[in-house]
Length: 226
Ligand code: ADP
Image (tube, protein in one colour):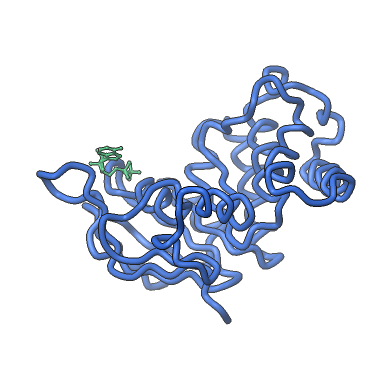
């Protein structure tokens, strides 16, 4: 099985003084795995996710995703790589308010280019599989939190990313919607999607992840299943 994520000696120091946000993190995520990264607030989870997403750069070490070493890419190449290979679901959805649900899902496909009709068909397919067909023409302001997050999941999947990242995906929705998002992630994992999930919800980790790791004070430790 090939590795989708490989981190070697990764560190991140935001300020010149003080402890680093991340120190000497080594991590691999194989294709088809779903890794849940847990740990207390401020431990470095979001920093780790941002480095893997190519949204930020490490101050030391190497970040490799889907065979590409992100450190070596220019900003432009990094943005291109991110759009094509990584899907991200954020805690607070980050939908564009003046676009319908369907058009939100289509944004990453339009940025990558390619066949418009194929993208539209895939968007409709994703919306359908996530139970959103009836909401496809609605604007985010008319959607519930759970619906918004499902649109965000569809948007993250539109370019068939090598890696799906999720940062507290159930953190801003009610319990019932959280259950639904949890099941969607579970199904995606079962269908072979490689996932890295940041959460402090042990239930979500247990249900969706094939492996768990913990970050504490910027250091990552694997949790060996009992
Ligand atoms: P978590 O996601 O586990 O809550 P973070 O990765 O957000 O933790 O934060 C880890 C540490 O890095 C914290 O001490 C936080 O204050 C610091 N940090 C995070 N982002 C920044 C930033 N942009 N600038 C300076 N410090 C930051």
